[in-house]
Length: 117
Image 1 (cartoon, helix red, strand yellow):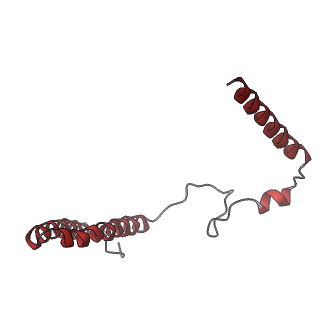
Image 2 (tube, one colour; image 1 turned 60 degrees about the vertical axis):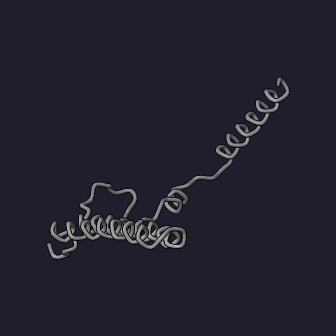
Image 3 (cartoon, one colour; image 1 turned 120 degrees about the vertical axis):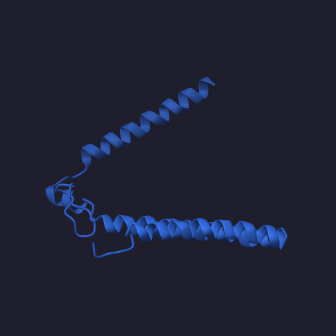
């Protein structure tokens, strides 16, 4: 146990020394800082992050995620069809698809699918 503690302390010391040396010996300039800054789809990363965001993009993303998860949940229902009888499979499938259709109807009534607001 004592040997493991000594080895872990030595490893930590070596890694800290290497990180310290890399910080000291590395060249830093303004152009390197500019090159290493993130590029976010044409936005300036040094400007304010509080720019107006379109709610329609957010709603379309949420709708996409809901229907993407729907596809991932429909695949096990196909396997369920092989393991159970048709009546149980049809009840489960009907219930699941009705929940999704009610959600889509609600989104349509709330004008989430209307882009021209």
